Image (cartoon, rainbow, N blue to C red; front, side, top):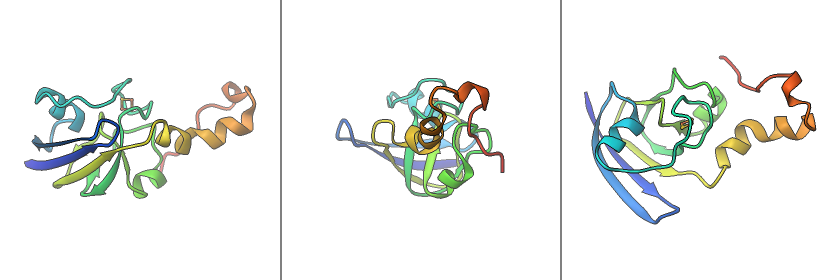
Length: 123
Ligand code: FES
């Protein structure tokens, strides 16, 4: 099924619109249409591709780097997410989602984070 997506790239003050397939990763679909957005790992882990979801629904069952709580609060990792409706997204502030997902955990650990693993919930 095909969905319409609108994205506001806030850092570059650009607006994009495209039609994407629901069985293909959102970022991959956009890239194939020449729309370039931030990314790094392409595995739903680093949060570089995180977007604020202004409207619409994204299937994020493959995402490992964003808690269910943050997903419910309106964030999505589009490298590993599938559109389930028409979407309106906007880019995050630099490191916004990384800080929300990992910041408090790292601040408590004082360089001993490697002993305790990464703070990802699996609900
Ligand atoms: S590019 Fe790393 S989570 Fe999407």
